[in-house]
Amino acid sequence: SSHTSSRPPNGTAWTPTLGNRGAAFVRACPLPFTRHEMGASQSRSLAGDGRDVVPSPGTPGSAPAPCSGMREMSDASGNTAASQSDCPVPEEYRGKHGIFNVYNTKIDSRNNMPATARQDMAPGQRKKIPTTRQPSTIPKSGTKETWTYPSPQMFYNSLVRKGKAEDCTEEDMASVVSVHNSMNEDTWRRVVTWERLHNDECKNPMLLRFLGRPDDLSPLALARRLLTGEKPFDRHDWYVDRNGKQVRYVIDYYFHEHKAGTPGQFDLVVRPATDDLSSVLDRVKMSIYVGCAMVGIPCPISGNNGEIGAEANAVNTTAPES
Image (cartoon, rainbow, N blue to C red):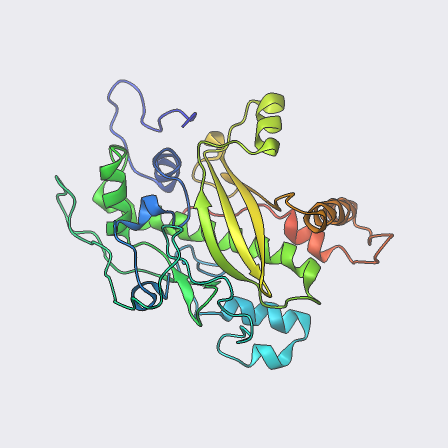
């Protein structure tokens, strides 16, 4: 990572705060539920991986009932029939592209054997770390379930394997994972905001798979680095199932060291990849909506009241726990 250490100089005692943990988190991880955090080396079957990632807005690390986030979106769009379902994912297109696990590997449904991620204590670990995994609100394509977060123990095991646990203690991990979970939740909310541009086509998008690409700068990230010197600490590509169509989203994650431990310490840049004309047009539309929302006027072309633009331009508020 390009960020400096959060430890004070000259051997001063280091008191872990969420700011310290946030900085350590940034240096230690590619983000949301990548293979690096999950702790298991084996592929998982449908039974073992059916409930794999994010908490709703509010307390970091909390997780509402599965699909509640999608029900809220359906309610807002007036789709009352879908909102009455526990998981409003139409059967006719659920799982069209197969089911993927957290290692970006398609699951063979014929080998439906459960596999449990390793939750053993890491070498040199002094204290026990919670092994509970939080469910998310992100619908998992091909299932009626949602993705699930790694446990604090799984996250810690990942840091130890990569030699990046020096800035984190066992006591820190619950807060570090809380940040991790909240970041994922915010990422999905932003993806859903973009997907509202296609509400007539698909009211219930689902996450098919994701790919961590921390070493690959996106064109936008490269331009931002040249202009400002800022470099994202991680990049993800998320593949969304939009009524059977795969749509790739690119997410750049930035961390502002000078805001560590406060709302606004993270910056998420979420947008559809320019893989087709539809996604290019979406980016043009959203830039107009965001611009109109910033000046407080409706879009002169579509008449949109600026709600979508305001949501897309909202600041990430992952903050310290009280």
